Length: 253
Image (cartoon, rainbow, N blue to C red; front, side, top):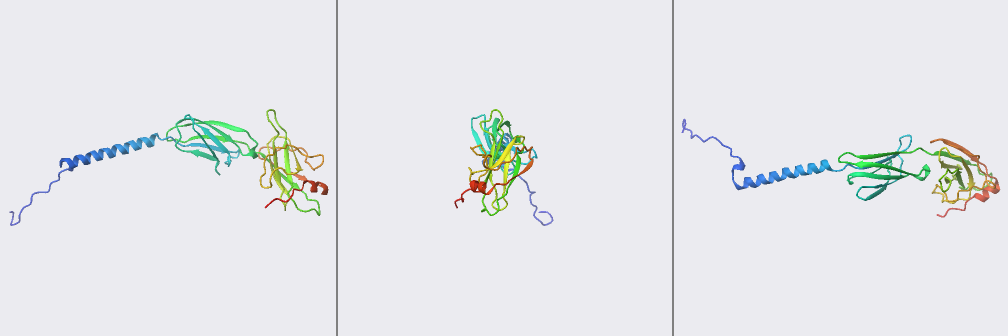
């Protein structure tokens, strides 16, 4: 008693690790948790970075729908198409050297590009493939007066270079209302454009298997040559007889 008040013993704190078996169990659990966190951190640090293939043109704009095939050191192969940004990417691949092949969209009239990238931990492995834009020809087809509207086929046939199996070609349909057709030509090549009977459906412009023009009977342009990304124009004026010959049958619904 002190001054009529019972004195209490001062408060003490005893660590749980001194409290026997439960404290030992908690210690083991804590050590296991810390070891697991460290192991996960180590695995994250060693995780390989993504493999990124970026395809762009000479204006640094992404090329969409280029086919990419990559082969790795473990023999596995991955393929895909480039997105709107011109990229195809794969995370979590095997570390080591990867070989990638890019097949450009047909309008580029290019072959297969080959490149290499090394996948390492954490950092992305990137291969940049750059291509030059094709020339673009806008062809105006003048419909003879009084003739029915139609979407005739306009075909370009360009000069071949040594080693090519066939010369580059492109076929597209002229619009029903404006009579214009857009064709993509390999830059720097001599090309002629003329009206033909269509080989491709109206909604599928592209290269054709028959690399011929009927310039003896149908209208054709003189030789054209466009530079990288250059726009060229041409006009075709068929006669009534020529229009009737090249006018395609109605497309099925």
